[in-house]
Image (tube, rainbow, N blue to C red; front, side, top):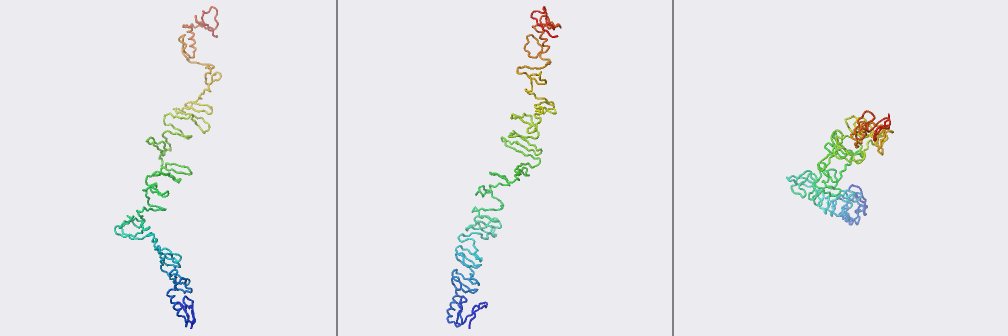
Length: 478
């Protein structure tokens, strides 16, 4: 009678005829009255004992069947598709093959535990290898100086405690090298000279005790300019903004730029902007801009290289003489032709003036509104007869030509016949006196034309018998 062999769930797996065997599974199944059943039965029991130990998986496994893989030294179970490791930790130097999700592997070289994610082994811990010694974060509980427990996280590198992370500040009860006080936050080991390296977006404070830079890009705190105290820089200060520089508790002085133009401004109403210098140890103010009036005050000598253009009035507030070193002073430059010159203030309304009269093409001078031509040598003549109303000059020979000359009380009387020193022009009276003194003696005028003895003035020529030897005779026209 044939056997029907069923699985645990009742499903028939094989029907075995009497006297035959079946190899549908990993075991050899035999029918009734099979003569060699003892060998197959014992071999089947051995396979069950050793879980089919072999480097090759059973060829006809059933779901749930165990197989000991001798190549990986693992018990594996058939899941209906393939043999998978049954789990548990493997301790070996290389990661296990054919691992299942959740399997653990102890790396015997580094003393680290890995778990299998289903696709790869991930480190479970510790984060450091046995050769690296304690490295990474270690959670500890220590007491403060009054015996209260505090939980801290210590950062170790190569078995050295580099930093401690704490939620509060306290002093350890038992001394910890490099950590006399533990601060709230992260405290670095003071014996290592440890510093924070890298980039941060903000900082609560900066250490300015050093000015030694560790590199071109790592700048010591003492090399930064302070905003809360007076400070000095040895480099150029650049403000890369048109808003410029603001100075003063009310930003009175501003230096700004706009479209390439720069403005220096005193922004307080009616306040001055002054420039001072040290002159021989004394502070002087050569230039002041007066806010209340808009005036500019200058003290000291001023040197101008180039042109000086003044559109307003020039006012002299002192009586000193103004000196100009230039050979010429030019006025009315760049304007249409107009009378121009020099005005001297006097008590008159129009003052005193010396100016060039463009309508007459000559210089004119005068005072009180009355002006006349300034005569040049070229404007004079030595011929007053031919050029009336013209200023006269002597000719190259010393002569002078005139139509007539009227003299008023020129010169003085001749008192002696030997008087020869006077060079004044003689008058009519001097001529008459001269005649009276002619010959050295004074002749009284007898009211006639004849002065006996010496001189005669007649309208007719003398006749024989008139006069004596040596007498002079003047004939005048009737």
